[in-house]
Image (cartoon, rainbow, N blue to C red; front, side, top):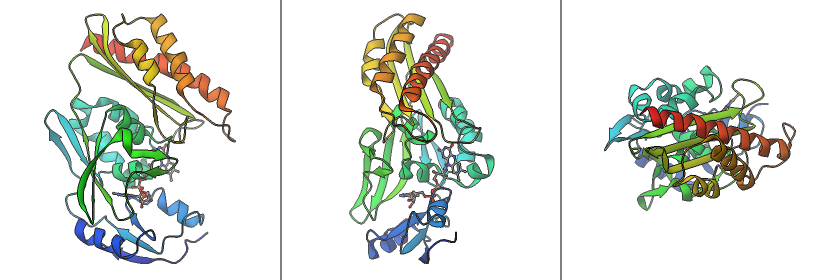
Length: 289
Ligand SMILES: Cc1cc2nc3c(=O)[nH]c(=O)nc-3n(C[C@H](O)[C@H](O)[C@H](O)COP(=O)(O)OP(=O)(O)OC[C@H]3O[C@@H](n4cnc5c(N)ncnc54)[C@H](O)[C@@H]3O)c2cc1C
């Protein structure tokens, strides 16, 4: 199908985009990479009266080093993240996960900020923003504000962003020394959204787990952390039996539903297995680092 008719604004600055959004509150939508919005328009699942194109705004696609961490501009394409040396060095979990974001053509157009703002619970960037305690920066008519990832994803495809607010940049704070990562997902075909995905980071103090974080995708209305499983791991020696136990706990903390692709029970089983694998891989890397 063809998209419904809409007015089009090509913004040249963030202020111009915010101004345009503010003129049609609730009716105007930002157009970033268009890899989620355009299919929704074509399927007539969205009927915005106006699209505000942010692709011509200079400087909002930068990936910058920041205090040991990185700042990713909203318009950074998935592919730019996949090939960034800085990301590979500081957050190799993003490099690994990028390969799971759709296909190359989608990664060439789709944007980091667009994916986070779209907030698909099975998408890789939202679950990694949650895992990495990202600080999400937004700008709107009332000025700029920073929203912690934990407060950003409110419900299915819905975020804390206001109608005229633009996600401008995402800050990923530096990870502590002796931290390793694991990323596991299962999808029916390469490039499909995950039936379930789990990302984990483990920080070791000798053989003891000093800290652990687990984030799950595709198994709830939003990406989810697994606080019970994380608590179970802290202060204990890293071993296979513990990771098995944490996997079962994470599965209990997931909230999947049945759909045409998989049953909720199968997705819960996946969480248990993928969590165990992600933790094992994270602990191995932490021990080496
Ligand atoms: C066949 C196919 C397979 C895919 N597979 C995957 C996959 O496996 N994993 C995955 O993660 N994604 C997948 N995607 C989605 C893809 O990653 C999209 O690029 C991403 O979800 C949205 O980014 P975008 O830049 O294309 O946003 P757009 O489609 O332009 O916008 C998406 C939504 O976010 C809003 N928005 C965009 N930017 C901003 C901003 N800066 N501030 C506020 N709101 C904003 C828009 O108004 C819109 O509502 C797939 C897409 C396709 C077509």
